[in-house]
Length: 272
Image 1 (cartoon, one colour):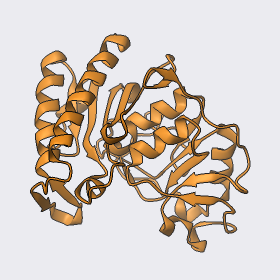
Image 2 (spheres, rainbow, N blue to C red):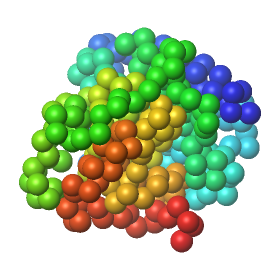
Image 3 (tube, rainbow, N blue to C red):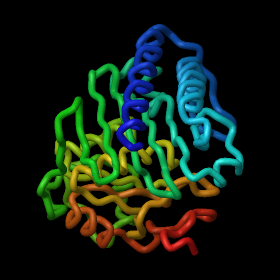
Image 4 (cartoon, one colour):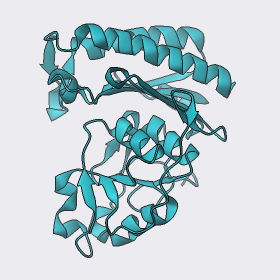
C-alpha cells in the first residue's frame, strides 16, 4: 500500500505544481486569514480543492487535515489521514520567489508512512515511505555526516537565534528558506546540515519533510526531544529539530528549558 500511496502523492504534487505555475507571478487574488494566520491566495484554494477531490476519491476511507480546510474532530477516528499544505511558503509565492512547495503526507495512527514535497519552480520532487528510503527526483538522498554545531550550516529564523533561547550562543552558519517543508528536504539531501524552528509548527508544514529526513538517515524531534506524532487534536508541534542524529541532539541540549514548551492537546508518543 505505501508504494501505491506514494504514486498517488507524486501525481497529486505534480498536478498542484501545474496549478501553481499558472498563478505564479500573475498577481493572484490574495486575502489575509483571520487571527493573523498569514495570507492565502486563489492558488492555495484551487490547489486545496483539487487535492481534496483527487486524494479522497482515490482513498475515501482516509481522513483529511489541510491548512486551507476547516478542521474538525472527524479525522481523529480515521486510521489513516492525509496531512496537506497546498502551498507552503505562500508569502514567497506571492512575492514571485521560487522556494515555495506543495506538501502531502499520510499519517497512520499518528506515524507518517508516506510523504511527498514538490518544489515546482525548481523541478524537484522529494518523497519517502516508511522503511523505504528517501529520494529526490528518483535518486536516493542522505543527510550530512556533521555532528558538531560549530560551523554547521543550519536553516532557521533569525529570531530563533536570540540569546535567551540558548545556554550559549550557537556557533552555526544560519541560512533561511521560506518553506518549512523545503527546509526539511534540503536537510534530507545533505545540502544543509540541520534545521530547527522554535515556534510551534503546524503539522501540515512539517509532516512530509519529517519522514523524508528520517528516511534519509536523520533524526527529527520536538524541541524538547520528544518523538514527533501527527494527527493530534491540536495539529501543532512544539517546535521541530531535524538533522543527523548527533547534531540534532546537540541542538536540543543547547536550548534553554524555556524554549522547549509543549503544546496543549498534543498526544505524547506513548499515548498519554
